[in-house]
Image 1: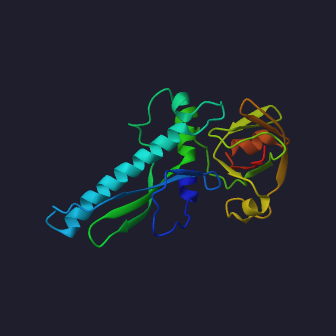
Image 2: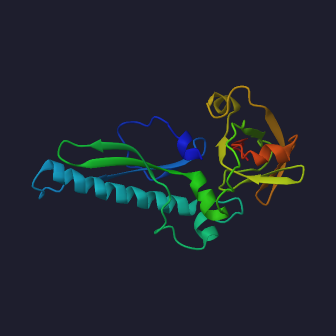
Length: 221
């Protein structure tokens, strides 16, 4: 779901830092480089090999970071899955490819976090029809919530686990096109064992539409 929403502009020059998680965009991002093979007969051939190596290195970074992400249950993604991520197709996205004149290559790639939710907790049931559902916008800043994969929201005895974005500032969240300035903010009552309880009218109907969850949290807690 979120892969379609991740059209974000990244810098043209990728850094060599380790993978980082962007909970606001719902994506893990990493960069990797590979030098040109000086023994290659041409720059073009050197670039082909360098890009293949850079992509492999970047995917390895993202898998390692993904394995360590916390899930709503408190376990890491790797522990919750019960198997390594090394051989899984996780839906990597190539964001930037920066090619040097000598045949070297730097790539920046992303891994949608919602894809990990589907891996750990199972895929979503298909909708009978596609609906343009407004996001469920939750203020959990008074709770001890921290971002995680697979957060469950509960209202009126109905539980829902869906694609989720986490923000620390309301103004930033409302400025996001996926949320909108007119989104209704709902207060969270509590969080326990990965379940965030809220007041939401007609929760069963709302959750049946599989809306995007947008959660405000406090980093100070």
